[in-house]
Image (spheres, rainbow, N blue to C red):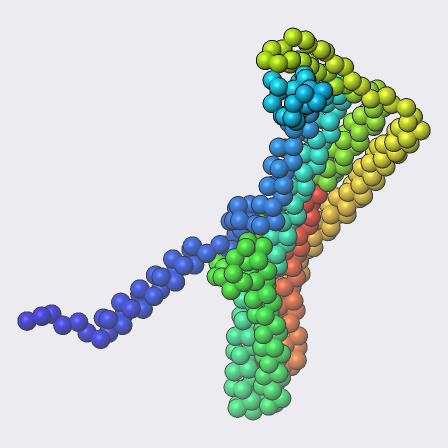
Length: 422
């Protein structure tokens, strides 16, 4: 006889298989921590890939910028009819004489090096834009993840409070049935629960929107599965503002772009002054008569820089451009230093808020709620006092979550300014 399998066994196996599949899908989905999201974005973000390719293209322009121009060859056929003694021909051996010119343009000394330096400065700017784009993408992902984590934890806390309100409603109904409380207490609990149900709907919508935004940053479909956020990044110890400001001035991608722009402007100015001197063309010219070459000429050609007014205007233009680039870099440095100072101040404020909420406000709210619950059960306080105590502990827990998320937002701001992780 074939062994029989019960319906319950099959159902249990199906449920177990579905649970295992869901668990594996959850483990495979990103979103549990921000590091996994950043790793995906570093490789898959179209914005990051675009600026990296542009930086690579700019580096490829450095060599050609300083290369010599291509030589050229010129062929002159003279007296192609031999003073009318024959028909016109293009055969070098049958014309009067044929001149060949092989010439090489030569820029004045130092111009090629300056052009190469200008291209290198432009490549540095492209590299800075790539670093700045990545810092911006990483900063936005860190910000979105902090909001994603906060919304997830707020959803869980709101569901717990809805369940707590349901239990309070049951207590009120029991007391009302025993003649120890008014029916209004149960109604108040129902109103409170309905209010939190409405807030829950908004939080769920925000959670969905944040998931879509994160997927967009990762170049994934908007409805792709994300794992539940588990933990925030550890915060660094107390930060030294002076050391961070030095680090900002040395490593900020935007400042690196402006420094490269200043360097390029300096080289452009030097090239403008170098254009006071002529460029050359040197060449060799063999002359063919019949089937043999019986004469050789050498050629030197140079341009005469007579338009000095035009050149002086170009020199003044490059001087002003250099001054403007230096001023732009200086102004950006001051602005970024101010932004860093504000971000550090906000981070310290968020730290202090978390400490106060965790060590003082939350314990006080919990004690107040426990006391109000015991007092209501004993008939010493009214139901409104109990609901108010419940709101206080819920607000304290939400404030703690917001303070933790706010620290992550400020940390993301600081790292965005530095262009790297702390």
